[in-house]
Image (cartoon, rainbow, N blue to C red):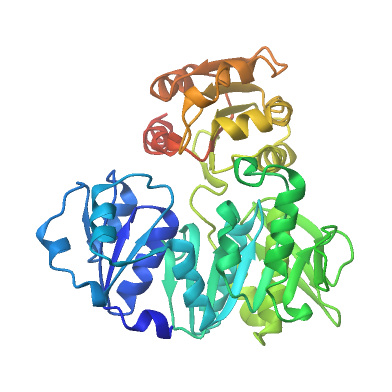
Length: 452
């Protein structure tokens, strides 16, 4: 980390983002002076403020900014920030300004980096690898794209020998990394606003895979053509590393794990879904290659609590179930709804879905429609625009999407209307799903369902 060592002050523009806040926590844990700006207060900004990181929500050049010395200060920004007076000030004063992805890449240059890429599954897989590293007491730092239920954070610090990184394909950010070990979980079409088409996104993942120096340290889900030598992993079919004999007992999943030379029976954990056993399989493959014993790994798998908004499940005294999930792509929706239907085939499912991005809704409209037909009842929220403007996507609305969904039990509503409409519905299982601000429904839903 020699390039970064010369800086004592780190100013983050967009500090409340999930990736930015993990970096901010890293430098804070290493004794640096960390401060920053974000547009909106959230639970996450409140928490990192509580941890001692100075945050402002006003775009003003205050005395703390003026006091920063450009020779000892690095400014880190996210491309989501398009125009900001604070950013203009740092540029006009010739401060060093770098993108988040570049800074994370610099950190990985000087660690044994374990990078997890994929259009789906990378948050769970990277968080599980980070958890296993910590349970095995490996000196590692973790930079995650979700809030670990074990760490209660998107960052964990236990040393600097290893780094565990969620490798983000958006804007080709993952090509800034220096992975020594890597996972590719999936290369489905997504972010077509950046890549243009499926061919380009697949090429981006192949470029990422090419960064790994050793074929034996690149793990790719079986069936993905990555264009170079690698190890495969799978569930319920043979691969270099695979799991089988899956069974569910008392809300826990049991499975057996196979390496090229041995079989280890009866791993058990509470994270539902075949796709999550797949994520566990590759995590076990990497940690066993790092020399961690299987008894340690069994204990660590058993106490893994998952990630907030990744199939977060609550069962209430009246028998009703509430599941909250981040899924925002048809493949992810199919995995979540499919898991629910597999484990609870007779229960009535109400799906509350908030589409994320006009471009993604447009590009995968037919697939979204087929996914959403698998629930028994549907509340479809307005599209969450994130970085996009409705005026650039004329006619792409939730009402337009709803017309493609072949079910009678569907209704389009605003976020503000949704909670009251949920309370009017008859359901056994409630699923809230999406990557926008649908998470603001979580607390009121929990309070209401606990009172029933």
